[in-house]
Picture 1 (cartoon, rainbow, N blue to C red):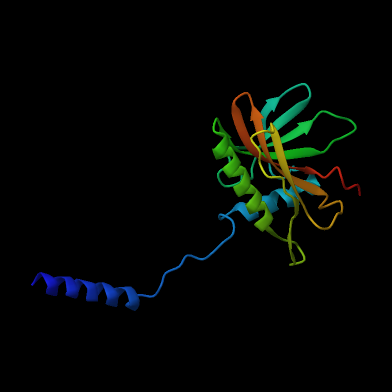
Picture 2 (picture 1 turned 90 degrees about the horizontal axis):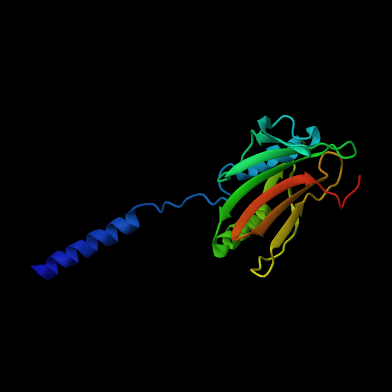
Length: 188
């Protein structure tokens, strides 16, 4: 009786496992919203991030910080910084993705974000898609600052932008952040 019951259960399991269609999630290299958020920030670079600027968060002598209306999935904070400078009126956008006391957690998040940036595809207004070129630097616990750079293949006034993924060590705390700003290495 026991052997028969076991045999029947095995047969039911066998039939059910092959009769149901395999359900597989659609593969997507980035979490929903990541590519779209990066694209929105990049596309608003030409307006100096004015279209995605939210309320004033902090006003100091050297700069003003505003909340960003565009946030990356999982970001702790997204801000736009405007410096009080006559010579350089460009702004920068920043998302703080992680603040932790654990280096391994920060290094893991840094690597993950670098992979996400490498996989990011932007849909340009003409319908074409582009991916970032990169200069990846692996994290190292010996460095207080590690940064990888991502930039678009074409350099013009609209897309003269650089994305930096950074891992920073500050007094026992590690921060992982993404910065988007003018690419100083490519003059137009």
